[in-house]
Amino acid sequence: MSQQLSRLYSISRKETRQIIGLMSGTSLDGLDIALCAVSGSGLNTSVRLRNFATVPYSEEVKTRIRTVFARKEVDFQYLIVLNEWIGMLHAEMITNCLQEWGVAAEEVDCIASHGQTVFHAPAHQHGLPDMPNATLQIGDGDHIAVRTGIITLSDFRQKHLAAGGEGAPLAVYGDYLLFSKKEENRLMLNMGGIANFTYLPRTLDASSVFVTDTGPGNTLLDAFSQKLFGLPYDKDAALARAGTVHTALLNALKNNPFFDAPFPKTTGPEVFNTAYVLKAQQETGTREISGEDLLATLTAFSAETIVAAIRQIILPGERYSLYASGGGMHNPLLMAYIQQELPEMKLAPSDDLGISGDAKEAVLFAILANETLAGEAVDYGSREGVPSVHMGKISLPR
Ligand SMILES: Nc1ncnc2c1ncn2[C@@H]1O[C@H](COP(=O)(O)OP(=O)(O)OP(=O)(O)O)[C@@H](O)[C@H]1O
Ligand SMILES: CC(=O)N[C@H]1[C@@H]2OC[C@@H](O2)[C@@H](O)[C@@H]1O[C@H](C)C(=O)O
Image (cartoon, rainbow, N blue to C red; front, top):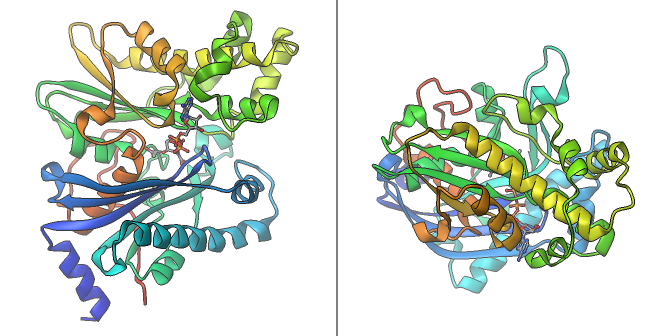
């Protein structure tokens, strides 16, 4: 057996694996790096978050990514070059973090790299007849493996697509393994650029777990904070709090077939972007409203569509706990809105379950890699959007 394969084999047999989970989402705020000690697999998985950092993207990095991000037409050569460059950039960010944390690369068993989503195109969104669901994450895994010297698993979403899914959300797999609790129905709500939630039944029945996107989380708030106020985001909802919700505009924003489509479903800034909002403003004669009013309305838009999606799946007579993660959990107005509209369940941060809401998505990719390396296949039954597959392509350092 080659040395590298034998290393992979021995990693898969370890009791505890040291795995770096990476996530860089649609907010383009930076790269989340979570060094996790993962023990066991399947429902016996336990994880200890050893170190976590969000390495911010510089304005230059953001500008480069925005050149291709969620755009139907791009400079193809630039996209190809970015694929390599982001792999190199992420490798450098990991190496710097390890140095800062005093952790040697040899201590780390593998990296689980999500990559940078540049375009998400489920069939319901691209509308091309007889063409499959598609999504593209860039930042090549071989570059990360070679530059860090650490085995890297990457490009997790393609297997999900190959098995009939939309390539997202993948959170369900880690949520189920880490956060399921007997006799407690749990809803794990993540509010990143786009919001999604996982349903974890109190029966622990894998074939009943469920996940879906709900629509925008922070993506529109960030876009208009930037456009109107030159700010990366509406910190602590200071701007939205100073505004008033415009009901006609809110209703126009909610008037999109995505919200009527059955679960599970996914979306992205390819649909929910500034042009989408400007069109709704045009239709409702609200082009002249203040920036604060617009942000108040967009906050209500995110909150109401999240609540409406959750309301669709809850059953009368059942009790649910709701746990929040992602940057949106730091938005007090968004959180208060959701809690107010769902008074029957307590909204708490996922931190209460032992994993920081900021680190959760990166940790979940570490869990996906752990399952690929060591997991007995969990049978998720035939639930749409949750195929029973192991994900990630393996890049060896040499
Ligand atoms: N104090 C705060 N007040 C308001 N919003 C905040 C605050 N802190 C973070 N956010 C929001 O969280 C965003 C970052 O969220 P997060 O890191 O979860 O996004 P992401 O990982 O890119 O998302 P995705 O889940 O779509 O991949 C910021 O852009 C901002 O909108
Ligand atoms: C294509 C893509 O990158 N989708 C992200 C995005 O950010 C939130 C939401 O939209 C979710 O569907 C997904 O990420 C999380 C990590 C997921 O797959 O669960």
